[in-house]
Length: 271
Image (cartoon, helix red, strand yellow):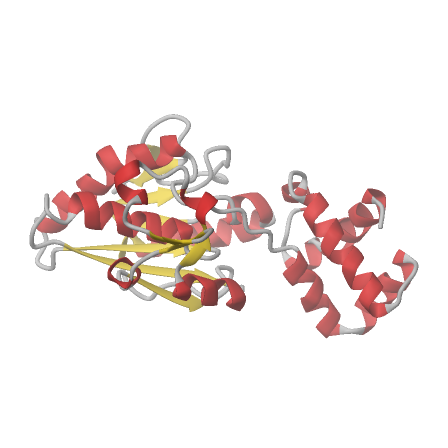
């Protein structure tokens, strides 16, 4: 399959799934390989035949949508972001939680892939914050639309190279078996994982932090981005933290101020 063929498919079908064709610019080669393998499986030599198949088969449309879920994740991904979380934002949330009747920091990681981001937060909390803020607990939930990735998150087993960006004390928390880094259950137990599509399923409680980096504000069409941000605005408390991709932009008017330039970390205002 050529890149032009892939562009043709994505331009036609992305809008039907509420996705932005432009969001796939940096990952299109991966999508092209997936679709190319699918054409071989189906015995289709021409992209026109695949487009006909898509029109006639709703199940194939879902298959195509799954090909468009590109997960790029590792522990402590984007050091500037996690350094800011470590030094300022997570301690702030913990201090504010201690002033409330129920001293708990509630965080949701939307589009969590195989768990590297929520487990990074779990390590930050366990190894640095728990002792500094006794009496405060962490409630960490994480969702992804890909059931296979959620299953991997539950296992907590990763290529050893995926932990290379972690600070040394955090790397030492893993058990290394051959080329696999295994996160012990004491850290895995801090995160609750479930399969859910962030376009339709949201937590039903007030939250202190929402992480949705490099997903809705990259891949979703503008109207879907706005709906997602409206949902965030409903469930994120004033002063709560919103984490998006460092190069992503929030759509339209909103009630968020940037925590630190270039991090994609925003704080919800009370207005």
